[in-house]
Image 1 (cartoon, one colour):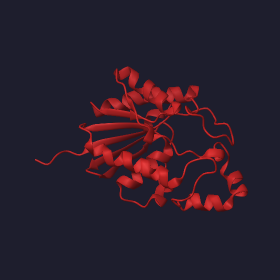
Image 2 (cartoon, rainbow, N blue to C red):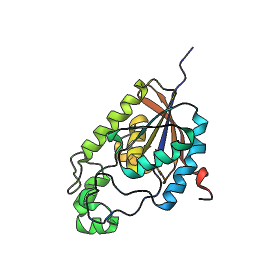
Image 3 (cartoon, one colour):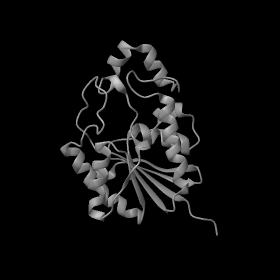
Image 4 (cartoon, helix red, strand yellow):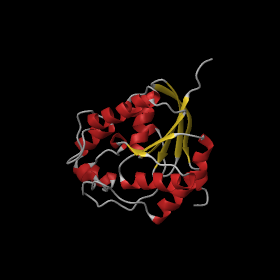
Length: 206
């Protein structure tokens, strides 16, 4: 009998407080807002559908806090995986896209076309971001778990989807990934099938 596919549940963190404009993100990053904490609490009912699962989180506060709040009613814990951290925008952190484009149109072009050699001023090289997210994705199928939950960030989820679906990373902007949303992928080895994207039904009255 063929083995059933693993289920990979990608959860974006809830709403966080605004980052300080133009300042590189601090090690822990911004914490959840009051709304973000309510959003995180709604995730518990969603996760109960998946039975037993292994769980990992980005080290940034907004993701780890979302995991803590969502998993508390289930009596579950999580491991931290630094590869699930959001891309480091450096000095562009918290700035409106229009302001960034006006200051550095060439840099924005490198970002949009996903030039691996582009580095955010004071931040991370896109190639390094791509490498670490792909490394995380490539190890998921090695875990002895029928389901895996990752609490992470919009940029990371988009990169994971591109890798698992066999898409060029330049397609990352094609995926809408809202705050506290749930995206579901069925894994077949190192590739996957997208089953659900940006599910936010649990937030209807939040």
